[in-house]
Length: 342
Image 1 (cartoon, rainbow, N blue to C red):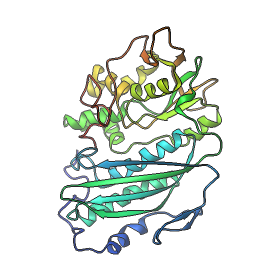
Image 2 (cartoon, rainbow, N blue to C red):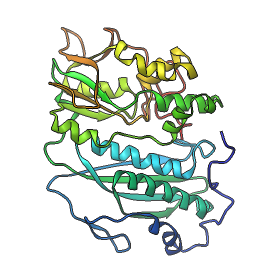
Image 3 (cartoon, rainbow, N blue to C red):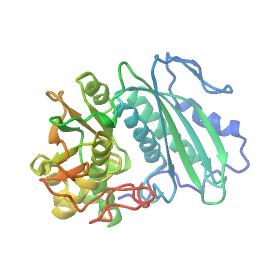
Image 4 (cartoon, one colour):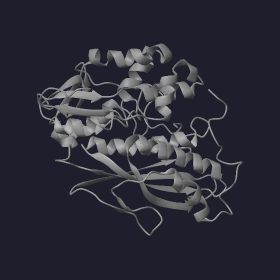
């Protein structure tokens, strides 16, 4: 792994002493516009043409809690915070249209780091054909850096909720499982060279955004993105729908094999079942799966005295996935939204 991924947080031109307009003058030219953006950034607020139904979601990342500067460049963080928000829009069956960015930072953070962050945001938005609508800059106490993204999206039909799964549905995923968590494990153990693809996925998630509207059009009954682990996020569908998701380990074997050579088979299972930040889409379908989706299980009604939840080959798994306040999943220090992640 290179010793330096990009501009450092400090050591360049500090924000302290710069006017807000000076900072914006460096970063706003990096952001794309959109035909739907009637009033661009620079006024009191942006004006965006939207459809009758608009999806809105927001998320925040914090230095030292959600990323480490030693593991991720500012551009990496820009990619990640955009990806995790756009994945939420896609998981509702919508098409992302724009984002608002807020940066709250120690004034001693360098302008170069902020420009690199903006460059990552711009690249992620360009890839998704999404406009940056504006945002806010604010100072913070020493050592504090927080980035918040609010994403908007258009919804052509009904939203796909977590609560629609029904007995007899198939459980399916679009995208990878366990790569981001395996990348975290390797970074934690200073072994990034053992699986560069997994490390890259940890730094820059790549959600299948087009699969969200595709799943909605194909009749998906429930859907969300895998942000906190397959078991925890699957459990959210199960509880909201009042059902049991039965996962098939045979259908997950290829995901495990993808990272087992780098992290070991036991840790690979932990990563696949409980690894967060993958931002692939998990859904249930009453009929045939659309192209690009693969079945990993089935939905059934709870038996007498059985609570809704997720089972793997008929058993409760020891892994849990990440919870922001309750802690990470059992069995590994490399899954979920770990405080060391970046």
